[in-house]
Image (cartoon, rainbow, N blue to C red; front, side, top):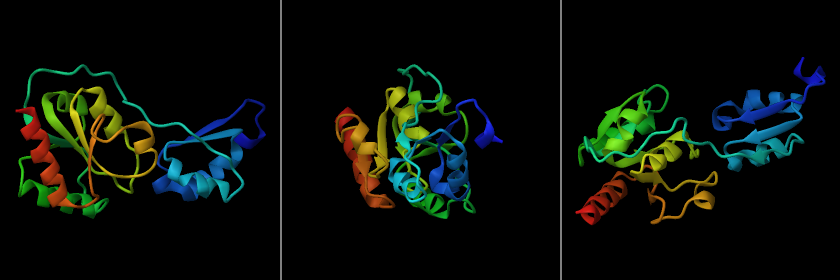
Length: 181
């Protein structure tokens, strides 16, 4: 009954890259649609919707820390059935550099790491980007779309590597750690 209510309805499509098949119908019931991934605006436009971009954010405030527990850290899902290329990437990366991998409470790891490495699922501008930057650590992320370089500048706010390119990520990690010495 969302399309029948007199209360204004706002729909925020966060994981459009996973759920557009459902989100396309939810957008029709809303008075306004917001999207977290601007590269998907054309999907909504193709069905007659005019979404506005609202980037994600850091999900909770976390202060930077002087304590270091890791040079490189990744907190996220490494479920092969959900994202085999991410698992392959981190397995190959761990053979070349020491990476602390965890799941869940990013706030326990990010502020205590020299580098937070981000790997997207489908080029999405994900929460990890904002959470890492908020913690005061160096963010090493895939060069991707969805507004990443509209919001942040390479070398000033973050450092990027080519998607899926383990050797390039290793090169960037070594550059960052060398510069911090």
